[in-house]
Image (cartoon, rainbow over all chains, first blue to last red):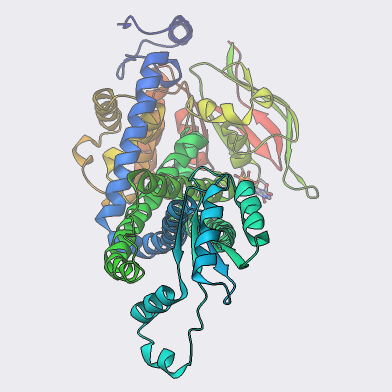
Length: 345
Length: 226
Ligand SMILES: Nc1ncnc2c1ncn2[C@@H]1O[C@H](COP(=O)(O)OP(=O)(O)O)[C@@H](O)[C@H]1O
Ligand SMILES: [Mg+2]
């Protein structure tokens, strides 16, 4: 008999014992190693080969019959798009608040009875204070003119007798002034004689920031809930796929298929569901951006801001895809570990 | 050393109920062919399932290829099954793929290269005389042909042990005799074969060893020690 070199000693011995008690083979002479005696490298190659085969096969199967998986894909896509879109919105707002954060501009409202000369003197005093970079005085008349011009409420103003607006000194602290220093400066300005009140833009900024933090929390909760929804949807789809292949699974286990071998196609299927869902969600977000970014720019310009809605960054898109694939894989794994091991020949 | 050894093996399904097998002991030498007979419900299928580790014994020990099956971990079961070919009465073929792919399944699972795989599948199909049908779907084949596809799949990776549970159950006498001849041919190339059957007429003609089960007990063994 011909024994190829790569056959291991153990099998060779075993065959030899067999041949000793039995007549020599008439057909089917043994050649090559039996399965359990394939070398490590050969097994590694086989393992990688099977991964590749299963990955390609399951993907082609899904793409060949898109109608069958469309529902699952869309559910995943929408479940990813909702938190993804909100995330996009929140990070845009964050950027906006970041650019505003730089200025801790203060408006110092003067008492109405203060004369223009007194106001000018006050402005000069404020100029001397530490932590003040620049000031400008908007006297009552100028304030009125500005208001008239900006709001178009001239008619309403004409009905009033006299000027309801106080004079304002706009105070710009240096950009790097800390929040505490800003608050201290605000207090100091408010204590000056002739000052009615001091408004620091920090207040609405803080409100915006805490709103943003809240929004992020909400996106997180929504994201977790929708991630669970994705797990359920993929898990259920895989459960049905397993049910449709019970016979095959039994036979595969009967002829020596490991649990990993049986599991593999289902895990890849889950992975591809997540990937297609991620890509669809990315497309949906691009569409959302295309629809919204014109009106947003218009709105911003009405407020005198050059703000533009930023599209999803490449890294965010990649994250979306990876999260989708991870959830798809995990949903499949969850389903498989619940249903597959029960199927025994 | 023997290929199969049962030592006082008992099997009971569920907590209550009768023993499906009760204190069964026997040995099969390497390269031996034996028949397992007994009335319906005697425990023939149970005995074969224990060897496939489709069931675990309630008591006693059994060895296959010198491996104590009680000591095998669940993760090792697939590798054990690769050493044992099985043929069932309801041949358990997959009708969503060709004859070739049915027979190739054990090789794909074990990780053979496609070239190796093709060579072995052809050899197995040739040995059961079905080479010309490899592209067909098994659903188009006759009962006897389907049974032979099942046999080809059981032997394709050359397991040292071949088990068959009522392999001729649905076949007429002539086809049954052909199937039994196939098993004898595998024995001749060194495979240990155990066939459960109730077709007494057929096996008496063949003059092979008979193990007789009755209500879960080993009641007879025509084994003649050399
Ligand atoms: N899965 C099972 N659950 C409960 N009882 C079973 C099961 N399989 C077999 N039995 C019982 O075990 C006994 C032996 O059955 P079996 O091994 O199938 O006998 P045979 O194959 O000789 O007809 C019978 O009484 C049968 O009812
Ligand atoms: Mg039976």
